[in-house]
Amino acid sequence: VASKTLKTLRGGLSQETAPTICTLLLPETSAAAISITDIEYVLGFEGDIATSHMPGSKVVGPATEVLESGRMETFVSVDSRQQVLQRRGGFGNGGSSFGIIVPLIVQDRTVGTIKLYYRRGIEIDRTQLAIAEGLGELLSTQLSSYELDRQAELTARAEVKALQAQINPHFLFNTLNTIASLTRTNPNKARDLLREFSVFYRRTLESSQGALIPLSQELTQTRRYLTIEKARFGEERIQESEHVDEGCEDIQVPSFLIQPIVENAVRHAMKDEGALHIDIHVTRDDDDILISVADDGLGMDEETVSRLLNGQGPTPQDSSGRNRGTGIAIKNVAERVERFYAVGSGMEIMSKPGQGTCVTLKLAGAALQATA
Image (cartoon, rainbow, N blue to C red; front, top):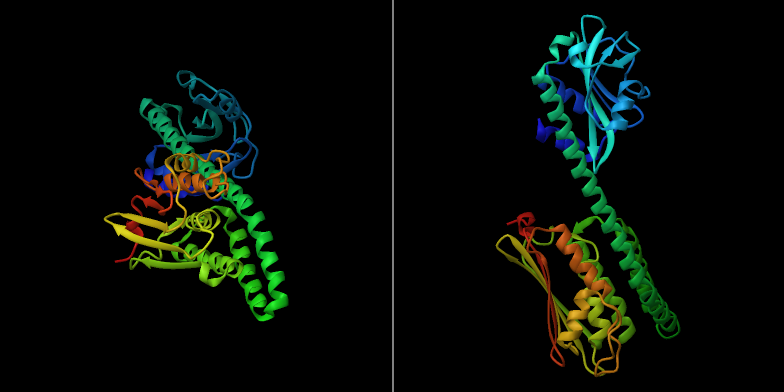
């Protein structure tokens, strides 16, 4: 039953999920009926008992007291409408039905209740109380898991939006200036570049939800970025190559995984003369996926690498006279890799001044998604 309820509760507690949960839980008890509420309304009901506390009705009576106290209670139904708290030993024979109300607690907050209905008070024994308490703990744990996943997703979305805010301004203005210049010298190329940029920008905005995307989509977006930068700096100034192991194109990765690393190379590794070579490799390593982005540019010393990984503020200018930037984008990528994949995931940067840089991402367990 735990696996079935977990699958249902991936969408949280709602009018859509609660009825299914009631149907799954009722056979696990000796109760005649079961209902689930949030803090305001009855969300689901299953069973055969006379009560007005049906889906859509407001939470009233003993359930409100359980919501306030966060404690399990028993009750007796005076009639189909009125329920009152009653200790189990004082049930007697009066009442149209009897029951147990269990709080659902998520992160120290009571978010709802489970209510079990019995035809006779004598049926509510220690076993039924233990079962009711266990079901409450089960759903509370699963709802807590859902809430943590939801918060992680919201955090990821916020991080992607922050990354967009960093990437877009300088790139937007540089690209528009390039297109404006090309309209005078090469109108056809300007038109093609504008089309490419519009697709790139649209995909960037669509990625703001922080969802996982196929690796092939991230690579395509990275190629669009390089096409635009080549128009700005010249085709001969940026040379890229790719190698992707078979079956890896379909693995799911966070958006903005590779493109910020490539952009960092274009912005900071390009020498005053000659081409910047950027090589992207995606390989399988047992159950893991390794993604490396290597360049033969200016390189960095150990202090700059450390600051880049820590996302610290602007570093002193290097020997080329350029400011290395904040490193927020790189740190953002590293943190999302660690969040989305198994223990052992992360980023490694190897670099030497004058010899280039290699950034490697380890996606632990990601190869299990790849096709053979």
